[in-house]
Amino acid sequence: MSTLALRLEPVTPANVDAVCAISVRPDQEHLVAPVAKSLAEAYAHGEVAWPRAIVDGEEVVGFVMAFVDIPWAPQRDAADVRSGIWRLNVRADRQGRGYGRFAVRAVADELRRRGAGRAYVTWHAGPDSPEPFYLGLGFRPTGELSGDQPVGVLDLPPAG
Image (cartoon, rainbow, N blue to C red; front, side, top):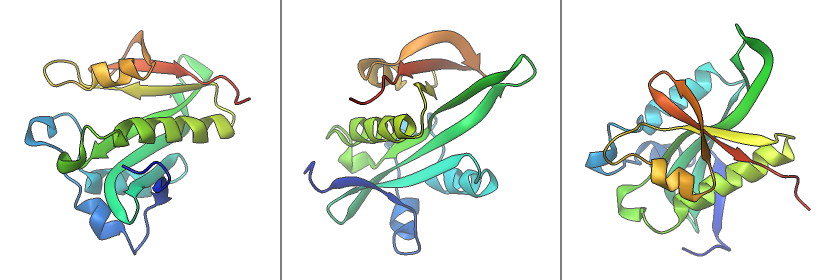
Protein backbone atom coordinates (compact mmCIF):
# COMPACT_ATOMS: atom_id res chain seq x y z
CA MET A 1 0.00 0.00 0.00
CA SER A 2 1.32 3.38 -0.98
CA THR A 3 -0.20 6.08 1.20
CA LEU A 4 0.53 8.62 -1.53
CA ALA A 5 -1.61 6.72 -4.03
CA LEU A 6 -4.34 5.68 -1.58
CA ARG A 7 -7.59 7.59 -1.85
CA LEU A 8 -11.37 7.44 -1.84
CA GLU A 9 -13.05 8.07 -5.18
CA PRO A 10 -16.69 8.42 -6.17
CA VAL A 11 -18.23 5.38 -7.82
CA THR A 12 -18.39 6.21 -11.54
CA PRO A 13 -19.07 4.42 -14.82
CA ALA A 14 -15.30 3.95 -15.12
CA ASN A 15 -14.93 2.00 -11.85
CA VAL A 16 -18.38 0.58 -11.08
CA ASP A 17 -17.55 -2.90 -12.42
CA ALA A 18 -14.41 -3.13 -10.28
CA VAL A 19 -16.36 -1.84 -7.27
CA CYS A 20 -19.14 -4.39 -7.77
CA ALA A 21 -16.57 -7.19 -8.15
CA ILE A 22 -15.31 -6.65 -4.57
CA SER A 23 -15.92 -9.66 -2.40
CA VAL A 24 -14.86 -10.26 1.18
CA ARG A 25 -13.59 -13.55 2.59
CA PRO A 26 -16.18 -16.34 2.70
CA ASP A 27 -16.17 -16.29 6.52
CA GLN A 28 -17.14 -12.59 6.40
CA GLU A 29 -20.01 -12.79 3.91
CA HIS A 30 -22.60 -13.04 6.69
CA LEU A 31 -21.20 -9.87 8.30
CA VAL A 32 -21.45 -7.35 5.46
CA ALA A 33 -23.80 -6.90 2.51
CA PRO A 34 -22.42 -7.19 -1.02
CA VAL A 35 -21.36 -3.95 -2.68
CA ALA A 36 -24.18 -4.18 -5.24
CA LYS A 37 -26.72 -3.98 -2.39
CA SER A 38 -24.86 -1.00 -0.94
CA LEU A 39 -24.97 0.80 -4.27
CA ALA A 40 -28.71 0.12 -4.55
CA GLU A 41 -29.16 1.55 -1.04
CA ALA A 42 -27.02 4.55 -2.00
CA TYR A 43 -29.27 5.14 -4.99
CA ALA A 44 -32.43 4.79 -2.87
CA HIS A 45 -31.05 6.98 -0.08
CA GLY A 46 -29.03 9.43 -2.14
CA GLU A 47 -29.67 12.32 0.23
CA VAL A 48 -27.72 10.62 3.05
CA ALA A 49 -25.46 8.03 1.37
CA TRP A 50 -21.80 8.73 0.55
CA PRO A 51 -20.45 5.68 -1.39
CA ARG A 52 -16.75 5.59 -2.32
CA ALA A 53 -14.28 3.22 -3.92
CA ILE A 54 -11.08 2.62 -1.96
CA VAL A 55 -8.33 2.96 -4.56
CA ASP A 56 -4.62 2.21 -4.30
CA GLY A 57 -2.80 3.56 -7.34
CA GLU A 58 -5.11 2.48 -10.12
CA GLU A 59 -6.50 -0.59 -8.31
CA VAL A 60 -9.90 -0.67 -6.60
CA VAL A 61 -9.23 -2.54 -3.35
CA GLY A 62 -12.41 -1.89 -1.42
CA PHE A 63 -15.61 0.03 -0.89
CA VAL A 64 -16.83 2.24 1.92
CA MET A 65 -20.15 3.97 2.32
CA ALA A 66 -20.92 6.60 4.91
CA PHE A 67 -24.27 7.88 6.06
CA VAL A 68 -24.55 11.61 6.65
CA ASP A 69 -27.00 13.40 8.93
CA ILE A 70 -29.57 10.66 9.51
CA PRO A 71 -32.16 11.32 12.24
CA TRP A 72 -31.29 8.41 14.52
CA ALA A 73 -34.40 8.07 16.63
CA PRO A 74 -36.86 10.75 15.54
CA GLN A 75 -39.64 9.14 17.58
CA ARG A 76 -37.56 9.85 20.71
CA ASP A 77 -35.34 12.82 19.87
CA ALA A 78 -35.52 14.58 16.50
CA ALA A 79 -32.30 16.43 17.36
CA ASP A 80 -30.33 13.14 17.48
CA VAL A 81 -28.83 13.33 13.98
CA ARG A 82 -25.90 11.04 13.24
CA SER A 83 -23.29 10.32 10.59
CA GLY A 84 -20.90 7.39 10.26
CA ILE A 85 -19.80 4.22 8.52
CA TRP A 86 -22.67 2.40 6.82
CA ARG A 87 -20.69 -0.27 4.99
CA LEU A 88 -17.06 -1.33 4.60
CA ASN A 89 -15.87 -4.05 2.21
CA VAL A 90 -12.19 -4.75 1.52
CA ARG A 91 -11.31 -7.31 -1.14
CA ALA A 92 -10.45 -10.67 0.40
CA ASP A 93 -7.00 -10.69 -1.22
CA ARG A 94 -6.23 -7.16 0.00
CA GLN A 95 -7.20 -7.46 3.67
CA GLY A 96 -4.69 -6.89 6.44
CA ARG A 97 -2.86 -4.14 4.54
CA GLY A 98 -4.40 -1.08 6.19
CA TYR A 99 -7.06 -0.30 3.59
CA GLY A 100 -9.94 -0.58 6.05
CA ARG A 101 -8.17 1.65 8.59
CA PHE A 102 -7.46 4.18 5.85
CA ALA A 103 -11.11 4.17 4.72
CA VAL A 104 -12.48 4.66 8.24
CA ARG A 105 -10.06 7.52 8.88
CA ALA A 106 -10.87 9.12 5.51
CA VAL A 107 -14.61 8.93 6.25
CA ALA A 108 -13.98 10.41 9.71
CA ASP A 109 -12.08 13.27 8.07
CA GLU A 110 -14.95 13.86 5.61
CA LEU A 111 -17.52 13.85 8.40
CA ARG A 112 -15.38 16.24 10.46
CA ARG A 113 -15.11 18.52 7.40
CA ARG A 114 -18.91 18.50 7.21
CA GLY A 115 -19.15 19.53 10.86
CA ALA A 116 -19.87 16.19 12.55
CA GLY A 117 -18.51 15.83 16.07
CA ARG A 118 -18.91 12.04 16.13
CA ALA A 119 -18.91 9.08 13.77
CA TYR A 120 -21.05 6.03 14.38
CA VAL A 121 -20.81 2.43 13.21
CA THR A 122 -22.62 -0.84 13.85
CA TRP A 123 -21.28 -4.38 13.62
CA HIS A 124 -22.45 -7.94 13.89
CA ALA A 125 -21.46 -9.51 17.18
CA GLY A 126 -20.08 -13.03 17.47
CA PRO A 127 -17.36 -15.04 15.76
CA ASP A 128 -15.35 -13.17 13.12
CA SER A 129 -17.01 -9.89 14.17
CA PRO A 130 -15.32 -6.67 13.04
CA GLU A 131 -15.81 -5.32 16.58
CA PRO A 132 -12.08 -5.59 17.50
CA PHE A 133 -11.20 -3.69 14.30
CA TYR A 134 -13.51 -0.79 15.15
CA LEU A 135 -12.56 -0.73 18.83
CA GLY A 136 -8.90 -0.66 17.76
CA LEU A 137 -9.64 2.49 15.75
CA GLY A 138 -11.06 4.22 18.81
CA PHE A 139 -14.77 3.49 18.52
CA ARG A 140 -16.42 2.70 21.83
CA PRO A 141 -19.72 0.88 22.37
CA THR A 142 -22.64 3.17 23.17
CA GLY A 143 -24.73 0.42 24.77
CA GLU A 144 -27.35 0.89 22.04
CA LEU A 145 -28.44 -1.64 19.46
CA SER A 146 -29.46 -0.96 15.89
CA GLY A 147 -31.58 -3.99 15.19
CA ASP A 148 -29.40 -6.71 16.69
CA GLN A 149 -26.11 -4.90 16.06
CA PRO A 150 -24.12 -3.02 18.71
CA VAL A 151 -23.55 0.68 18.00
CA GLY A 152 -20.11 2.25 18.35
CA VAL A 153 -19.12 5.91 18.41
CA LEU A 154 -15.89 7.74 17.66
CA ASP A 155 -15.37 11.33 18.80
CA LEU A 156 -14.18 13.63 16.02
CA PRO A 157 -12.39 16.55 17.59
CA PRO A 158 -12.00 19.55 15.28
CA ALA A 159 -8.93 19.37 13.05
CA GLY A 160 -6.21 21.66 14.12
